[in-house]
Image (cartoon, rainbow, N blue to C red; front, top):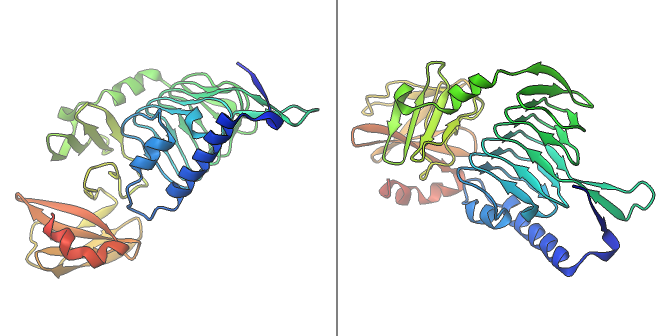
Length: 311
């Protein structure tokens, strides 16, 4: 449904919503890596579901126009020109640099905004730098290719690419049903407690399942696949190989395919500390006969003894 707004006559209520969004965006976009962003995200997006990962920086017009479902991933440099509602349903993945636009201007009176809601349906995947134009609905399970400009609705279970985006492939919906109903019994489990299960399926994909049986397939390019886990437990999948893992009495090294480098584990008190030459280090420690990993950001290293005492 189309709405029209004369921007010369913005209400105080609308101006207050814009100001609140700008304040919260400033706070979110200036957090240090590892700082807790959830309280700000909940205030910024009051209609946000569970198990969402939203990475800064973001740029949005009026954040309470954006309605976010469960298990949604929104990567950094997301832009949303939202004068009206944007609906992002469960299990949607939005890649880096995506823009969603609900607003346009009247060709002749450019102080008039013409606004149409946008909907991204369940399990859709929006590729890097794609642009979703006003009034568009992206159908369930559909894929929008990188750099595409979507000017019309996208049918469910289709792949679209280009400017303007056009259909290049149809997808089999039955395959989504099987992947979304995965059960922990079908996983090669390598971590489990009362709250979540982590493992790999027969295709060697890394899965996380929480106590509500929500399932998340880890992105293959992410090393820190479990940012949402309570204590930033750092699970090393195929991206990093660990040698001499069962013997913490001697030094060992990590090899990262992602960075194509070896990293030495230095003994410190009752743990090993691995400096990744990035913006964090990894603590490796034993607990209840299990070897666990915890990520520690560089600015936290001056509190290392305190962190170790709380392991």
